[in-house]
Amino acid sequence: MSWAGAEDTFLSTSLASYLDKKLLVLLRDGRKLLGLLRSFDQFANVVLEGACERVIVGDLYCDIPLGLYVIRGENVVLIGELELGKEELPPHMTLVPEAEIKGAQKAERDATDLKGSMRKRMEFLDFD
Image (cartoon, rainbow, N blue to C red; front, side):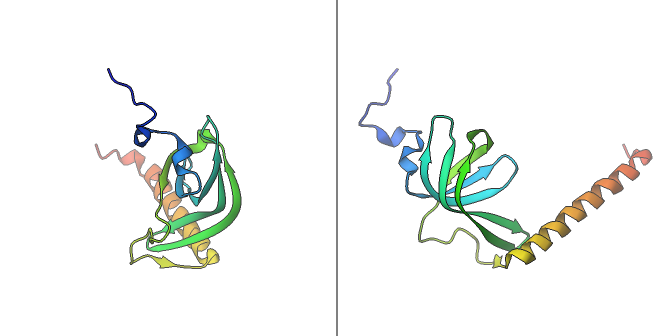
């Protein structure tokens, strides 16, 4: 069995290769954060500079600025590098103000809650 040596840095799984690069961090609760990786530790706790939360509802999106952000490693599901000069979203997505995206989020949440409550009311029918 062969182990990667110091010359095989491309095989590294360390976050060190992502320092000072723009990242997307997916959290356990489903939030998506973007920012420059400034620091990390052995527990995958990370510090993002210029962080923003990207909220997507349907074809609408908004980047909510957060500033300097510390993320506890146990909440991190995925970390991926983004290209600085490239737009990450498909062209059909529309940037909207924070107030509008919050309203769209609330409407989506209410629709999901209504669907769940309707399903509970219909359980007695037992379609199986």
